[in-house]
Length: 558
Image 1 (cartoon, rainbow, N blue to C red):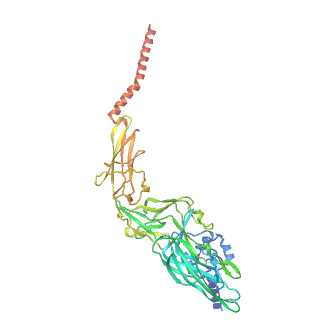
Image 2 (cartoon, one colour):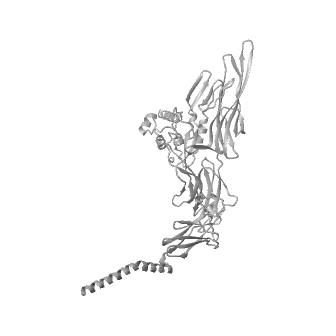
Image 3 (cartoon, rainbow, N blue to C red):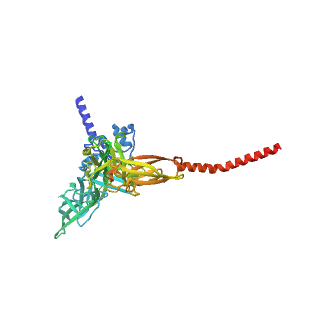
């Protein structure tokens, strides 16, 4: 008897776990998916955060919850990299999507409906496309990036118009197609739930179209005769996406002390860089991730000849969302990781306005740099192990070396400074810049473009030298002159242009010179003249005072 009761208890517990929840979205642990309760607890970032206490949760649902469920009840859980839970859940929940019968059409609220003579409420609607990421770039732009290879799931339905004296001879979905910019990618036989495994041969903006042909043949009894009517419609829906075909240009450099330099540029948002074979040396971009349902599928409408009814949907597709959580990229490990030498990109506004009101995430609230590349320096970079991972799960960049070669040579520079002309009020300092190895002069072009904005692949020699608060550039002989008027110690410092745009490139250098008027014969002569000039009136006055004193003393004696 005890064994029987135990078996019943186990059976009831098992049934309680697998029973389909009436909650929308479903409560973790109440579905039959392969996701565990902790994974499903992370899915619903657009759901309100009730933040129930443990006691309130147990009273309401008569069960305990995990720590992850508790966290998911109070806030939204984010990820360091694109998770696979959205795709796994969507594939599972798609199985629960069912169309209507002959005289019933089922559709989401955002479906584009088409009516004809015999066919009504016909539509072809994309359920989900995976892997993909909806990226919140700024306050005005959210881009749907999709992997070049993936799956698109759709939903096609319709109903046949019938009256009391009509009967259906044939009807059905004849063919379903997936197109890119009007070019057919794949065709499958008619089904209400088509799934396309696509491969896109090029990146960039694209319009994907889900298209279906629907036909019906109806016989109508007119009493003394019958009439057969045939009808056919094509329904479609466009999906605007960006095909995430990530490519990166890479440049390498070797420093004189043995350090390695690398610069990586890619036109699309990126997730992170790996610089070593063990994966320890890394760079993370600004993006974090969360998952949320497509709210367009929250409700399904069932349409018949008698009317329409709308109810909560059992099929909820989930997408990965990316948002900036850092103002700028960072390296890992934090203390011993690579050094970020330069960051170039576009300053963007915070995408806070594009985030769903229920999504409780740490999105930046101020402008941030949407970086398209970095220049890095580290003592250990494995060129064969360098990888650029993308913001769409499973997508990594193809690394492309530029036509002019990717290797950059870095040498030490030799900067000197000396006084070439001086007087009591000013001195002229000459700075000379040469290649430390070859002795060749280094000429700096007269350009106002700072090193931060130098472009990869340019051949001009950028950079400048500062002397005090003045900025100068050397001529073809590697020489520049600057005039100063205040005595003091003057340090010349060479600020080289980015090694990304120079070969050979140079390290910076400094040199110091001291100037004071007393340091020259002219200065001493001027000092003596000035002393005599300023002291003469006092000497005359003193002499006059003595003479007057002598006169008065002599007068008193008389």
